[in-house]
Length: 453
Length: 47
Image 1: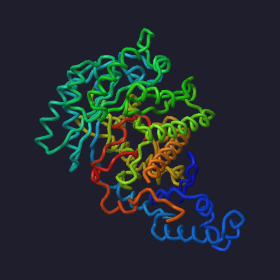
Image 2 (image 1 turned 135 degrees about the horizontal axis):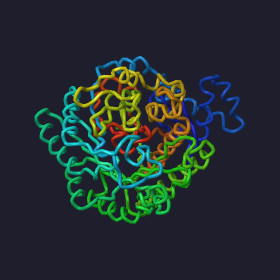
Image 3 (image 1 turned 135 degrees about the vertical axis):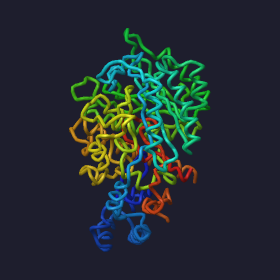
């Protein structure tokens, strides 16, 4: 399978099954769609009015050589491999700890309903958190790197427990030859020097929630009294980012139907001095006024294109920044097993409520149908785990023919469930945006590679 | 090549033999939480 497209003046050819990416001239771009269905003579006949015959012959030799080298028209050879791979015994390697089901903001799009996840307000106790870390170690098999995200609600509302759990984790990792990677997701309201200092010492990554421009942020991320959070959090986030030397953090925003011109928000964050930025589409029900709709897609595609082109310009002038969804590692990216087996929700990755209940991921918390067990007894509802385990790109009809399947790994199970009532489907608007992001990310790599020449 | 510039040399099919160690980061633990973005994660063995 080959995917070819033009973006920002580049002709790009992605050989889906090998992951090889080629920047080609117009001639090869015209040869490729004919290659598998026409003879060489027919291709020359079709193209000879536009290109010299000798040139066409030369281009075809290059295409043939890439095909021979398994860098073009490579066959998909992974289906049996990934099915076998997913049959391996399940280990748990990552937990999303819901340290607080409570929040000091009242964000309008919050999937956790202002932190409460359709339930009551609660803070996780040290005992529950400790049992969660014990559960993780006990179920991690031979995996050494264990990830724990302190999530909420807002985890700084229960920060002493965060600190105590980190101390406990550091003690346990030595005893069990593990390496904890702690991360923190915060809205910044309670951020202070003490928290920053602690996070800089202990947190492998921090995610700082902000949507972009003041009016955009304050519309969706108000306090409970309706006033905006932008003025309070921006200086703290700037200080925090600097204190982390502009690495190992993300300012992370959500865009909605109300700011379809979200590239302006990304650039606003870049202009505030942030170097690590993630801004992504809201996931909402069709009935929500802020939901992204299918008719919004053309504008959103244009925004991604413009953002990518601007990032190329800024890269050239030394003002570059990193946009999470355009990151792509062409030489050191994930292996094919990782790319095909999905995000790990319900199997390797689980969410833990303040009461110690286990759910497939943070997005399923509060939906009793997905209750999997708890941190003391472990996973008792293995049926749900097996259902998530069977989730891979070959289990999804829509993914089989999609060029982006090695980049999104079949997409978000929660999104699929929200829109189709089934985790083995895919959220179509999300897919369309994902495909556009992959195209933009590759274009940026092409621009950088050709600039270096 | 005159007509083609290839950007990467690492091929997915070559990761079958040694891949799957599972030590790399879970995508939702990085910065998404609402969209599955696996392709941008870094392989733990090529760091």
